[in-house]
Image 1 (cartoon, rainbow, N blue to C red):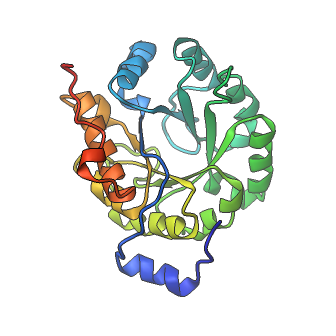
Image 2 (cartoon, rainbow, N blue to C red; image 1 turned 30 degrees about the vertical axis):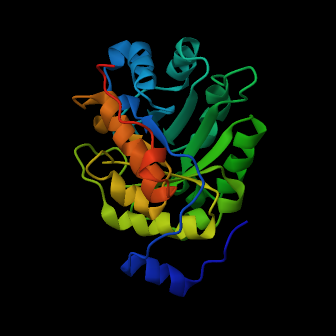
Image 3 (spheres, helix red, strand yellow; image 1 turned 180 degrees about the horizontal axis):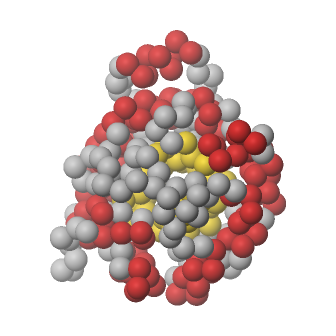
Length: 268
């Protein structure tokens, strides 16, 4: 099910902040491992999961689409050996995401839980070459969930064009590959537009999200929350994760206070 979104309605969402209806998409916090001690990636991943994280956000950077080089499919495959059941959210900040689909798919989990991996690529890397549909089809053929993401300057219509075919819509709330940026609030109009059109679609936000900014994302309708420094640089990792989880549950899912995830602490 989805609702048709008119240009007039998109304009309303850009310049106003209407209260969004509650949705039923589960609240999940996914730490971005780029902010952890990369020399101890496996133990850092386990630490975040023990603190309440529901999945891991893995940023693959090729030094072309963004200036930074991070890690590639082999590291993801190695990490899978240490965290066999966790969902891997692979964010491909690469100029040619079509080249890495098969290699990343090798990190799929096995067993009853299914693939446990999503492959999220940038519209800006494929649409100018006319291969966005081809990449979507290739990801599905390799048994992974499909994620499509747009940078802050790309209009939401780019996501809406393919929303019927994807599992995750990722809205970047900072510019990819540039450190030290603050959460870009006006990107929340894109989240509102997608949530209004696709009430049951997983919507993810990435960039500058932490306890101080989570309410804006939760109110707009995001349910998958990527947080790097908000988790790995926190004084209390479990507390920050639970605060962000509770925000989405309350402002996005409409849960009462007594239904929210309890506040946790690393001391527990």
